[in-house]
Length: 328
Image (cartoon, helix red, strand yellow):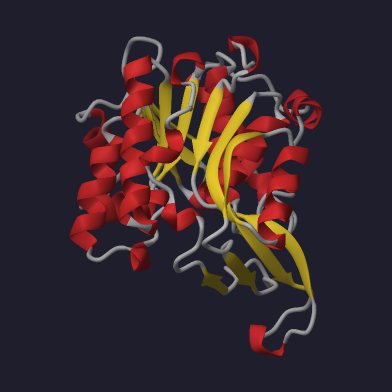
């Protein structure tokens, strides 16, 4: 029997895929050997939070195939609670192939996800989710883009977490090619962001979704719709915060951390989300949360996989101990 003490304190949901990363640079058509990993923005954040010691519950579907079994074993090995990871005998697990990045450039990625098990997620898959014992929900704009039933699930998760009093973080994570129109994407994701406490767009994402140009104005767009804090990712320049956490409105920019070599930028935004969400749940100040987001994002770009750079709590403590004191 499940009790409140072993129920997940953080809920996450979405599509996990089996990832194949090319061993060598060059066109995928010419690559002979790949390394197997898992991929998915939602799983990256879930894994990152689990590595920091949070009890994270994962809701999704995988196929009744070897790739689905691999994803389940990997997530369980990372410490995720997979009681709501459904094995779907009628649909296969999604796959993704990624080029080996060169010189910090964004690698080309090819998806094989149409009709995947995860694309058949629906609100019925969440009937046993313990919203009453959850402390936080992390959501992204990817599930609502994957299918209509996934979109219904996204609304179900957001509305139930809100009703239960859990805090919510929302990363738009735009996937424009999955949407039927730009207008539908903007309308849906802005409405979902309006249910969240912490909104985490990239600068270009914010511009595309709001039609506004500056970080200050983009943040204001979401604050006016109910968000408590908006943190915009500015790439190597760091990130921008505007919000009312702590009672009064504040805004500031925190510079990014220089890295010796950018290996692969995929997953950097997910690492940033891990840093911000974990710090706010740890009770740290907004400035400390933004700095931690920058710090973990910088770790993520130095490895070829999507989540290999996400630190354990012990490693994070080491990294933060080496930083100068923060004047809030």
